[in-house]
Image 1: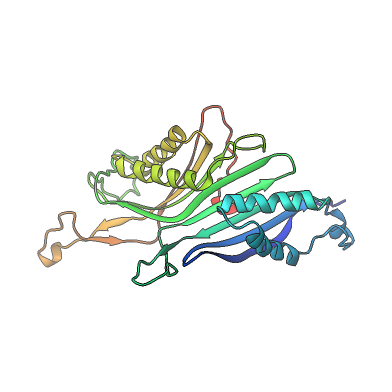
Image 2 (image 1 turned 30 degrees about the vertical axis):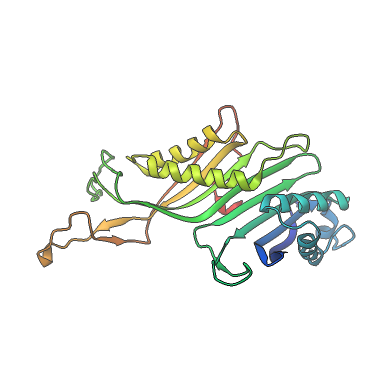
Amino acid sequence: MPILGQNQYGKAENRVVKITRDGATHHIKDLNVSVSLSGDMDEVHYSGSNANVLPTDTTKNTVYAFAKEHGIESAEQFGIHLARHFVTSQDPIHRARIRIEEYAWERIEASGEGAHSFVRKGQETRLAQITYDGSSWEVVSGLKDLTVMNSTDSEFWGYVKDKYTTLPEAYDRVLATEVSGRWRFNWTEDAQRMPAWDESYAQVKGHLLRAFAETYSLSLQQTLYAMGARIIDHRGEIDEVRFSLPNKHHFLVDLEPFGLKNDNEVYFAADRPYGLIEATVLRDGCEARIPADLTNL
């Protein structure tokens, strides 16, 4: 006899832009919020009874209403407000998962009165996932699409070679990647002191960038570990860091047919295929919980 397994429902990708008007100075929060709810939902699957179903349209409306009622201090704090509301206001809902992408804007400095002009910031997209089951929290923050490059201080040699190996060893290469990272906080209960979400995000990003820049790299794996280890060492509120780093290959162009010497100056940037390096760095004694496939977070 077939039985119902794990299930959830909700409203995906609710785009909400909150403008806070502080006199002539305005502030923008631009989020993409996805709500997923689970609980006592067997009957809607077995018989079609909607008696325990909060409409997905209602979850959408809640996102917009909460942007007004609670404001958006940070992606994490906004997700906490939403998750707590859905679990505590509806008996059939036992667990809420809120996923958020945040798009940053930078102020355009211009002459005249007011500060209300912005340009979309292009470095990365900020991420957050908040899960609440009525008693405990799991908060995972992160980022994606952060492209970084070292134009030197990177090598790759001494690797396994077989009859299919054609890659020459490199003792001075370009190392570039597009960082996709997630980090899990050890804040799990309301009784604990809540992290300062915006400060923590800025610090984590700063540490991973400094580790990337300051590591003389013999492999992208080594750089990945240095990035995660630096975050664990410097940010006590974080127990787990997971990175997915595609190797954005840069190959020296052969200029000899034109009578020119290429002294590590001209490269071909290949977008595919690419190496994909992934790993988790944990605080000693902690278990890994972030899924290996970051797209499932």
